[in-house]
Image (cartoon, rainbow, N blue to C red; front, side, top):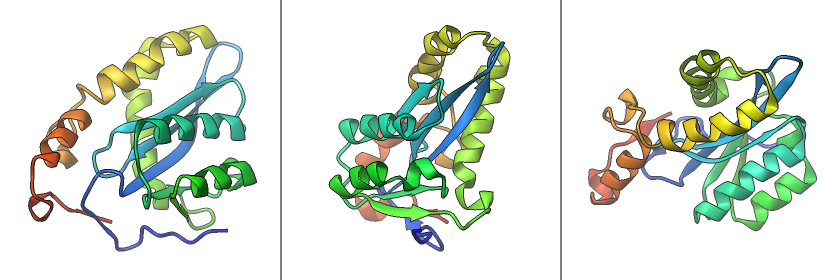
Length: 184
């Protein structure tokens, strides 16, 4: 597997570290799966995908969205050791786009606590409130929450009580030495 590159690291810019994970969303008769990628510095969702299947294709779709939206050569991509993230096709896409591969220690959810926190927020502020019943409910509502609410309106204490999109715009105006630093 791959080492954890996040230990004792300082994050000073967007596209320096992305974190990725999968969660489930319970619907009436089964589950739907969400793979998401967050920019660790700004907490912005940069890629996501929804599927009825928890497979490599789900994660690949989220990663393809992220690399299409952002130029992130040299960015660390951190995930757990799930088979989806360790698959040959996923690793090849990471390498083709110049992303460094980082993975959590075996059986240690704290190594990807930022994603766990994001999914807790997603479930409390969206999923449990709307009580999705069908796959179509998830497809119809969840993208709106991710893009319009979470990225553009939801305030985050860790980034100065700004939404991720606004935080990114504000730090781009600062000299690199004046930008806030996130210590891991």
